[in-house]
Length: 432
Ligand code: AMP
Image 1 (cartoon, rainbow, N blue to C red):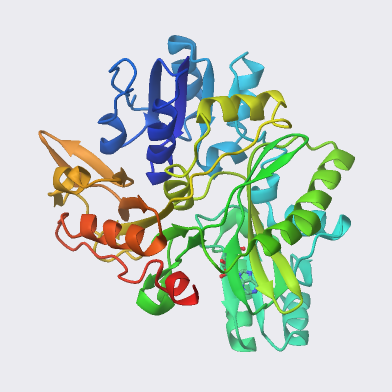
Image 2: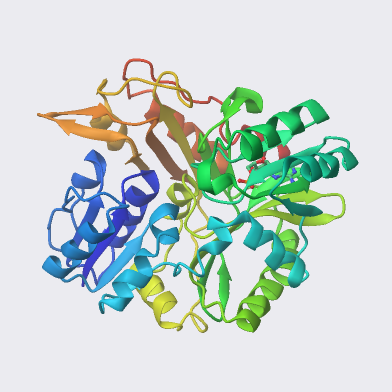
């Protein structure tokens, strides 16, 4: 089977690595991919993975590529092309594509849609209201004592949420969004949610339009510095499993969140085939959904794929074809840890083109895989090409050993300005 993967990050490298191990895969392209993805081969036939220079949001270019190469399955990684309707486009042209359609991707692409859907279907969510004007929005925020999360409706590269603890912050956020129009069309409507306290966790569920199959637990580390300090990032590391979400929590989350979500989708004619990834706050009153994503998490995918024992091609085909019902997701008892190595300055501005050394030494360690995110090949070398550069991942019979193995691999790798958190999985280990 020939497979075209869309995207260029660590998530896509993890997906490609796992898809390449499938007994069905004969050829893989990843557009546009990165240096690590371009270095992969299919173990069964030795075929190299190719990375055509077509951007993930270049829909006409992707369609032309699919017409030329005739993949049997397209796998979409990132949120933007999903929100742009890339899956609809492929389907309209008879190409089988995995991922939610534009309508189904609204769970992520519109915070207003997601919030109102949750309210219509009794899914536990923060109290919230939707606004287009500053004055009523500010009054609503004042009613919450200024303690609120102000969110622009549309996709904003992960920067469209401002967590506010007083009225000065809330008004400043609302002014940016509704008065200055800093987020353009994505920010003409905002959702204001009450600020919730608790532990933040996320779920992953593979869906086929009728059923949702929950993954085991994982935990992201969003802040750039140790001890959850500093600004938010796309994610500085992950571990799976995490003790903060127990099996009881998972069962409750399934009953209270996924069941009403599936019923709501059926009632509204939303056929969600793809990966649903809700972000939750575990509050004293139970779990609350802060947001929905409609794709695999990055860097959650990097810790899931080493533990997944099913053939990923078979799972994604079953998801596209509505056949997931009888399929059991199988996970190894191994724990896994991913440490993200980032460019100096990230999540602010950073330089590119720094030479990376030690990758081969890191990958010679047992049960280690270095997933590339922002990398490029220049001549014989590999250089940095993004904010998050590498997701150094290891797996072992327990979390402590997985953590130690991931950091041993990190210690092999060098590039100018590299920084990473030293406490990935530390809280999970302490809680255990
Ligand atoms: P979102 O993209 O909606 O998940 O928001 C990004 C981050 O903002 C989340 O990961 C939380 O850390 C924080 N956040 C969002 N909504 C809330 C809320 N209602 N209460 C507390 N924190 C929130």
